[in-house]
Image 1: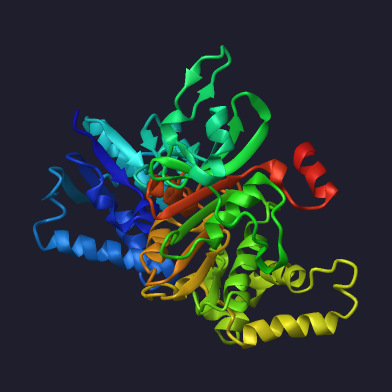
Image 2: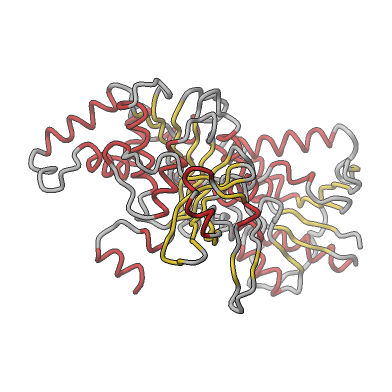
Amino acid sequence: MRKTYVLDTNVLIQAPYALDCFEDNDLVLPLAVLEELDGLKKAEGERGANARAAIRALEWHRCRGDLLEGVPLESGGTLRVESNCVDVTLPESLSDSVQDNRILRVCKGLHEQGGQIVLVTKDILLRLKAQMLGLAAEDFTTEQAPENGMGYTGRIECYAPEARFRDFRKRGVPCEELYQTDEAGNVIRPGLTPNQFVVLHADQSNKKTQLGRVCGEKVVALEYSKRTPYGVKPRSAGQYFLQEALMQPAETAPLVIVRGMAGTAKTFYSLAVGLEKLLCEGKNEYRRILICRPNAQFDLDIGFLPGDEQEKISPLLRPVMDNLEQLIDSNDAERYRDEAALQDKIREIFARGIIQAEAMNFIRGRSIAQTYLIIDEAQNMTPAQVKGVITRAGKGTKIILLGDPGQIDRPYLDERTNGLSYAAAHMQGSPLCWQLTLGAGECERSPLAMDAIHRL
């Protein structure tokens, strides 16, 4: 049945192309949405850029017909602006001065005229208000990571025949010979994904394990398991897998996506491998380490902060500084004996351009070549932002997306609509993307932090 979707402003701010996402249904934009777009068109950062993109799309449709009467869309539906419904009554508790309530008035007016009316908004409270009025409302789901992709961790445990297990390091194991078992003991052949990491068990001795990854039709041994990048030695299976993905050259693994809770050494290990590549290997594989940490409020207000770009973003680099302190001086007992000398070493790394930092706004429109690019806290990116970053990758660039989908600071994003989950779901299966999820048991913080994780 043909539906009529009423779009809220935040849908167009999140996805300016949303007008093309509703197939052969009818779209309605309340006049209040146009006014909000007009107020946002001069805003800094992504919000302003998306508002302007949405306005240009509306202008393109306006040139094709009368938006008040309705303009046909290429998908088979129609788009129109609703300027009526001003006489529709709402409960006295819903003030006319609130823009969201004006959108609700349009939905209620169209609902009274008949037809299946659905309000589409990223605002949970507005959806709640709509339900109170007996109106259908839903989230904009086009950018959501599919549910069947949310459970992919990039790692799997399998059994291998004893003979294959013994020769694993020399010959690998064909994927078709790996299996799992269910609770009843039945054999299950797992579906494996390119670059998926494997904990391999010998089927006649469950205590024997080896680590590998899917490469073509085989599972092969890890290539970098004996390396200690910048003096760091992996302490768990997850860290061996993480080291393998990070140490691979950009031509083999240009995109690495790592999810995990705070304290699983995502940023620490990424920095360690970056410093190893730039300072120790001598292969000139990368020109620099570039770090970006998205921040909801900071990305909008950077233009108003004092100082140059590096001074503006320095508050976001404090977690990076904490990790550098541990990497530059690995001696826990002596590290903080001379604070001045330690800080001088860190400043030297930035002064030499070995590590650079940049705000998310300044990544837009660039082509980044031969760079080891770390995007920390990537769960605070929108799908449009993560797409913009990945498509900025030039020759020889390696992009590492790090984050915890359970810790999101940005409004209108959740575990399925954030850029990290979006990229992980849509890049799953790509031979150019390596993914890994680190578990709570691989947390590297203090005993107190570990205890709090389980108790709180």
